[in-house]
Amino acid sequence: MPDDEALPPEQLVTALARKARTAQIVLAAMPDEDKANALRSAAAALREDGAAILAANAKDIAAGQERGLAAAMLDRLALDPDRLEAIALAVEKVASLPDPVGNVIERTEQPNGLQMTRVRVPIGVIGIIYESRPNVTADAAALCVRAGNAALLRGGSEAVHSNRAIDAAMSRGLVNSGVPDGAVQLIPTQDRAAVGALLKAAGEVDMIVPRGGKSLVARVQEEARVPVLAHLDGINHTYVHADADKEMAEAIAVNAKMRRTGICGALETLLIDASYPHAAALVNRLLETGCQLRGDKRAQSLDQRIGAASDEDWDTEYLDAVLSVGIVDGIDDALAHIRRHSSGHTDAIVTANADAAEAFLQQVDSAIVMANASSQFADGGEFGLGAEIGIATGRLHARGPVALEGLTTYKWQVRGTGQVRS
Image 1 (cartoon, rainbow, N blue to C red):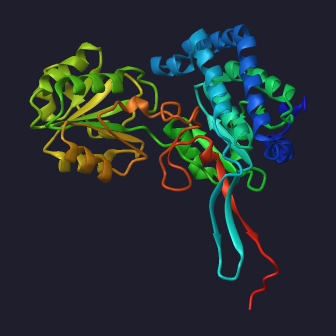
Image 2 (image 1 turned 120 degrees about the horizontal axis):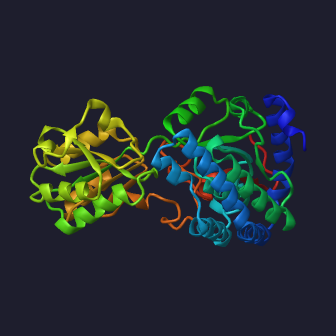
């Protein structure tokens, strides 16, 4: 449809969604190995088009610098040969994963002889709205195809050239391997009205997945007439318990905050037990890495370089080399702080006390809860799920890293021998 972009947004989204639905019906019936081979072909196409993709990304980086994008945003946006290879490898990883479609969740037989089977099936047509990170174009396409879904992708304007180059490579590889044209489509306009049309496309689109900042997710949740699989802020905590090992606590805190500050699994609030004997050394280690610290009065007393934390700081996802630091009086105080301020994404404890670790794991109600590990492991690849479409922070359908299983639903198949109900 070469004139798609000229259509009014509502007509454009409807046309794309109907093309996606036609493709999805074929895709849902494709054998497992055919879908896997198509993804391997898409990964090969990404490598073949590597120079063109990096050139497109350079345009986006230059435009982002001109617009004054923050360093963390530019880091999310940037591609290099290693990151591009990681994208291709992630697509191949999805190809190697077991196909969830057709898996039997449970099978029972009723006293009347009816056989009940609950089986996984694709969701259908999924709209993915995302910002900044061009790898999402490949990840979302791969995950949707592997789970038998068609994808309508709408990336942010800051990555428009990168997204188009990645989509062109992925689509060529998929179609050349038998996946129907229309199974993966990048919405060809940056008009914000297209997002509104996608959100209101009930009956044409089966689910929306937003992946971006607070303003994007808020708009999606306010306007959507289609079910939403939400990913909210990553206001992630690490609690250093009184019995934490000094070297472990420092290594985890520095990695969780500073490895990559702009990802959703980055640490945003460090809670230090008032009885932890190495608190001053811990904050000094963070300050030496170039991290700006904002603390409560007790945290400020540890080092004069720590600024004062405002009420807003405890509810802020910085996505930068900035960290809130609070002193708490034991695990119950830490749990209470997390209940008040956590976004339900990822929260962690560092401790040598097994009872404290288990209490934390049981009582923190976040999508991901960790003991003695960096929150930067909050990633579908690190969970062995291959690529992810996002971290779901709600309580329904899917939670935590959303990969293949999270992109399926189920149906009941009932087999009888002529039973009728009395």
